[in-house]
Length: 255
Picture 1 (cartoon, one colour):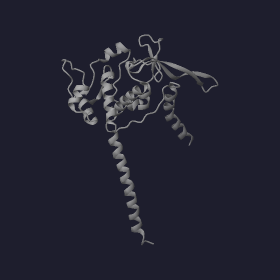
Picture 2 (tube, one colour):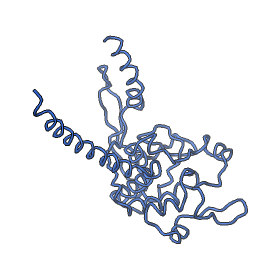
Picture 3 (cartoon, helix red, strand yellow):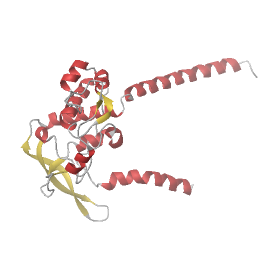
Picture 4 (cartoon, rainbow, N blue to C red):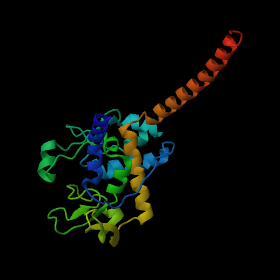
């Protein structure tokens, strides 16, 4: 029994370390993605290609597949979602992958790290993390070059590319117990010092839409898988009842 508990503790330890590694994070809200809200994912796709695809690809997805799944006609995909060109300067075709022109070498030189492909980011980080991260940028003049930091991902290497929408904010600090009799300073909120083009609620909705799109990109078959799983469970439950009634009927005369 003792060995089993040690194994369980070892398996849980990395997750606990991950949760505690950054200490308190702010913002720290939970969201539920509505996979039936295709309009939300469409808006998220628009935000992604306009603000994210300068540096980040989604190379596991094709434009026409995104359009088909989200109810966007090819003509509208070409008009609203495709702004990249190939090596010959010709516009990317609707059936091609959602890649970018930036080379890894240029990305590393410019940002100190290669901007990651975002195809699976919603699966690796989780939608709650993404939602909070994209709302958590604040001014930090001590960081030369970037000038920003993040309440969820400390010392982040990504600039605040959505600042024109959210505006610029500074953190409000408070204290909490460090668990050892002392206190530590934490971020408890933000104050907007330069408004963006969106209100807070509008920006939050835009980020929700973007995360919804990234959640779709990470696992396009998620809703289908859930529906099939639900159907299988209903079938098995019905079969169980039928098997039980058949068993009672078969054995009722057996003494």
